[in-house]
Amino acid sequence: MPNSGKNSGTGLAVVLFWAVFALFCGPAVAQTADTYTVRNVSVDISAENVNVARDRALAEGQRQAFETLMQRLTSSADWPRLPHPSDADLINAVLDVGIDQEKRSAVRYLATMSVRFKPDAIRRLLRGANIAYVEWRGRPVVVLPVYQSDNGPQLSESPNPWRDAWRSGAAQGVVPLSVPTPEQIEGTVTTAQAAAGAPETLAAVGQRFNTQDVLLAVATPIRQDGGKVKVDVVLTGTGPVASPLAGSRSYDGEIGETLEMVLHRAVEDIAKIANDTWKSGNMLQFDKQANLPVMVPLAGFDDWLSVREKLTRSTPVRSYEVAALSKTEAALVLHFVGEQSQLESVFLQNGLVLSWASDHWILQPVASRPNTGTR
Image 1 (cartoon, rainbow, N blue to C red):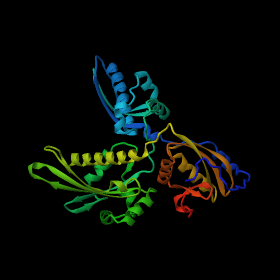
Image 2: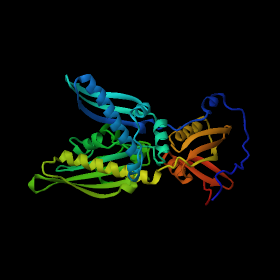
Image 3: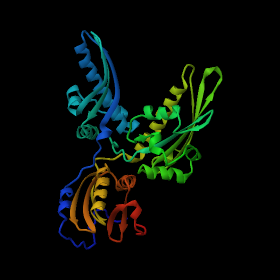
Image 4: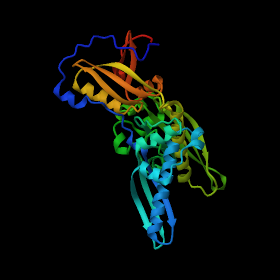
């Protein structure tokens, strides 16, 4: 295994920077804003008057959102050790609060709200508690929800309560789950093709939505005695995030639980498994920091923009420096946290591959990976 701190051995013939390149060559920091937003926080507070109720509700909502965010970012094993900031520290960690819906009376305030947190403030709290966390969301997992109705499989057709459950009930987490609309998948995959679950079909869907991860979720409802309903789910996945989810699961409804309720419960369970699986292998130890010089082959300005955009999506890369730049190569110094194996995994999720070529590291799009042999 080569030393990650080793200087590059290539002779980069540096030419005059393209003037327009100069606009893009400053240090860049990965962007993870959406990870730190918690939506659909419900509050219902009564007090001596509505103004007091509203103030208490907003404070309670921010506290709920903070706890949700902490559990989203960390391992369940660390939840007993999660920080509990004071009201003042919590307010300082909040970027803004959005009220999505609200109702009020003379003494009662009800609302559904969204809370955005300051990433740096949340990181400081977790680092101060010495708790590892994950924040990279990466490209979405595209979900194809096929519902086995009495009339046959349903994907784009209506009604499709399984699709409705996915579009409204998928839990928020570090792994984004995206359900295309019927218009978005038109011309890409038919219901019959999706139901068959052929690898080439899933690959075509992934290419259409620019992601490696596609999850086919086939739900079959089964009516049981006593008015209860059972839902059998078969998952087929492609890509490093969706593939480990493959398998069969059953969800038994309780007395009084509707089909829609069981479908929503199934979606929440699958989303939780997806997030827990991803977190288990991608917890970054932010007390581990390292630098890595890499060479980036370029075929032009568009290549540079593409690589730069992928770097900003790669959370372990806290920043990078452009040491040299030409029309055909860029020499970068990456400043990252965690293990290098985690960095490589995140790069792959973003369409980049890090490989060793004799005496230096090469970073480039997956499709153009060279045959460099073993490291």
